[in-house]
Image (cartoon, rainbow, N blue to C red; front, side, top):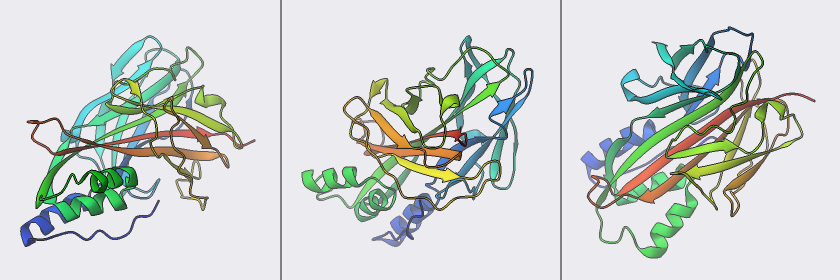
Length: 279
């Protein structure tokens, strides 16, 4: 979903630091080169970063990767980073056995100091109106000239290597992550995908989830109605699959950081990319 230009600042120092941080505060997705591979095949996955799915404006540097894994029914293995292009991060892995695999990457958190006005603007343009409403309602920025915001990103996708045991229920253990409520390999255009959003092991209710679409295998954004359903009381979101192609779920969860943790606010980003087959 396109976002408006970001304007920050009170002092020049805060303005420059905050603007630089927010300019790079994009969603992070994993897009495989194929969702269905032959038995014994090697999967290649691109880490893509931008504000507009599925474009990628910059590549995540390898030092930011906290964990990169492929998770199958029998366990998990590390996935190797094979290169960093001008705009994408490339990962490659050859699973030892056929089956369904969850590919999961977690990035190390980063922190930025910004003005209180800049933090409010960040919540506004990055799609966290509920957090912004709480900040204003409870006066959480009252008397503050600046705050430290810490942000981390988590991305998942699901691929098939031959035919074998299913892994879609497997959780990566990310602080914030999407977990399908049914097998994504069976989702088709016209279906509604049920996915649970979990935060630190518990279902997360009342969170807005953005649904993005693109063509497949050509990675081009498609004109689609803007859909931002909320997770229900059980943390489940119902995402309409208007057409076949590449689909992405993304969300942001903002919480006050623990006292003494070195930050005032923690911002968690999570995405799930999958393919919906045409009818």
